[in-house]
Length: 476
Ligand SMILES: [Zn+2]
Image (cartoon, rainbow, N blue to C red):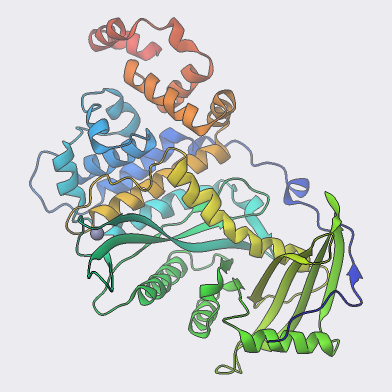
């Protein structure tokens, strides 16, 4: 395979040619209906609609809201959460009539269809749309960036269910069971928060190998997103696994734009065409020096209307490449994409930023859920049918509620600022939740923000007073 050479006849762009989104749009205004209490009411109303065919003491809504409360409070296990069964705040803050026991929770949640939880995500998303909160996320010509990627959140050699993925060790024959999930989040390079849409579980289907599972999950996910949001203008950003012809054809059928990673090993013909175009002067090259490090030269190359590969010569894509050269002239970073969006000298830098924002599904979503208090990889219970998937989806829903508050609720933002880290916020939240009684999460946040807990009666005394005196309860 031939390799690209150093820049040739570059178009020079000033480093600040593309203004950052933050320079162009004011931050979103406060929207009361996007704070915790109205959001949890929305989720609760949807949970009440879940079909319940059982006869039991606890409703499905109780079990679903209990799981959300457990993830919202960042309890590390179902057992830890069970210590809250008699906490009055469960009713006021999470609308739980009665918290089921851990065994009952698992039994009620196991048969729930993961797809039946999707409307909860859509309800929150519509609230965000109605509130105009998504406007700063518009990235390019009225389109949002939708970053999609898969992640594994469970692995075991012993615990497994009907939908576990299976991998057999060729030497020992030992089977490893796992669960993966395809996440889809709205991102913007200048926005810290991400907006998760309902994820799609990657589960075993008869006769499928792992790659088929991921490909099928992606087909289900994108089709559902288009059904649920028929008019949403989206640019899908994905890694190199997605830049294959059947997937691109699916994206086109669903009216989804795309910026997909492309690797030379997978796309030899495509890269050869790009090199030939460069040699014949048919490509465009833009270079500039990194304003933070003048020794680093940045370069974008692009060429339009290339065949994706030899098998699909009529499937035409535009090729976009970003390279960084170190002081010694050697390449130190290199990313390539294929896209259906027209590339110009004016928008090439912008599109590169869009392609690179794909990382936000890994860094700002999965890594946050794995490492910042959400315990995404903990086993809260596996079940026999869907429990593992249902719990993972409800954790993602809780993450959406938290991201929405971070984005839209000034009170929540002030609490975060005061306690600096997410972990510290969750620690103080749990402590307040355990020791005092509140009529709303808003009141709990106000107490956290203003250190009002010090002025409240001692915990044991307080709980007695709360039990017997509803008026006192009103004050908190
Ligand atoms: Zn399983």
